[in-house]
Image (cartoon, rainbow, N blue to C red; front, side):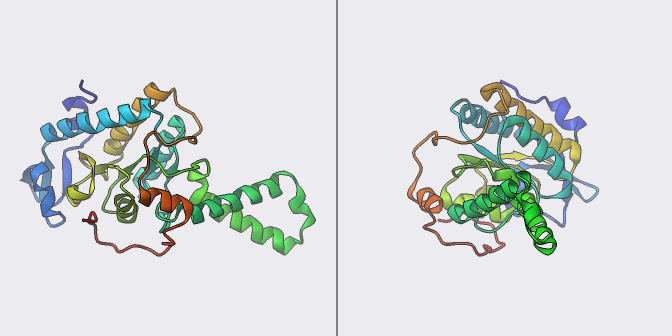
Length: 265
């Protein structure tokens, strides 16, 4: 089936890539031409990859899988959060913290701390604390909400991640690669396709392009699951040893990963 039409892709400017001086040679197979110093992405190939990627998303969603939405660039933040909330999926839109996947157990302690602070404020018990402490705890709460608020209901590692701009979200992609978690990505001409399991070659800078792809993914999840569900429960398939170790804190890897992309061999 066709999830998105050629007309929709053209109207959203999905075919406009980066300047020719900003590109990854591995992306060459998805490039149609070069016009006035800009790469033009081959939308026939984009359509084929959309069908492949969206078939996977549809199947995963029908089986109750969890997809972590990631988009921290300014033009993607609001769109990614909106679609994640609409589908009941976890999301990261502020900044990717090193170890969010590879040291998930430690990340859960930050979420537990956020829940503890929420209870303190919502119950009114915060008023029993000195003013300086109230201010400090309020700042801590806001900071935790900004960085881990979108994954607070994610009780286990996701079954896949959807990323807008895998070059910017290199650490998220590396951590998913390391754990064998499939990566779905809207990827522009500066991206490395080899680290992406399900690629949608297209403009990852334009709001209309991001909105078209993210919204259609949201539609697929809603159609498959009804949307708005809490993301928790059993994994849809048996996880591997790396995933189990990360969930149990076996990795101990909280440091930032290197900035060069590449799937572990």
